[in-house]
Image (cartoon, rainbow, N blue to C red; front, side, top):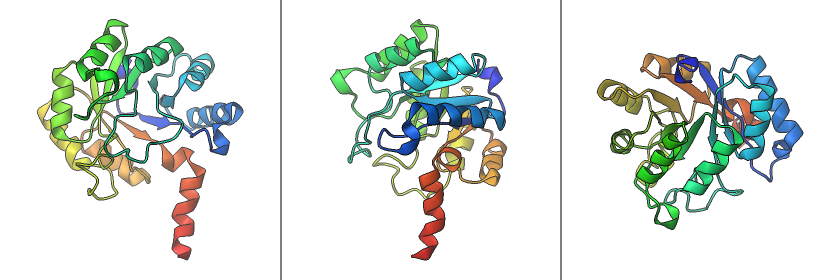
Length: 227
């Protein structure tokens, strides 16, 4: 499954429930659009969209997550991406090929541990993708059996909140240098040039989300100049 994604672009197609594109017909259209544009993998949130994507494109690898209907105000301090065993089971049953989960050192709900969830994912024959923010978190996740690590949370934890608003290429290079596990660059990629730089930094593949699938955020980047 990972070999299908090597040196490829994955698109994160997600919307929050209070956004217009959250409608099922809209998300399905977005999924079709990015695949027609050349996306070789999808990162999707929730059972509905995972099931729909696998029906439309059974051969396209799907990275599945769960997250709350509203991002917590204290998101810097809490685990909310696939936080529990129950969440992992839901998206496995929905058909996800890879389960992504918060692999930071922060405390998880119900006193569950990262090790328990990674082991559960692998026991179901799925790949575990560790969303991390730091080198130490990646090292820990790999020791616990994560199949792949992603820079998804760099800049989105209390420890990393002061990093510049650009992809964490430095973290990618360090992880590629020191570990055998594939490293995915995800987060804050807004241009093709940044995606290219990620591959030059050794990324196994690259995930792009908001720059492609979040019209309100794309528009905001332009309207900000009016201020």
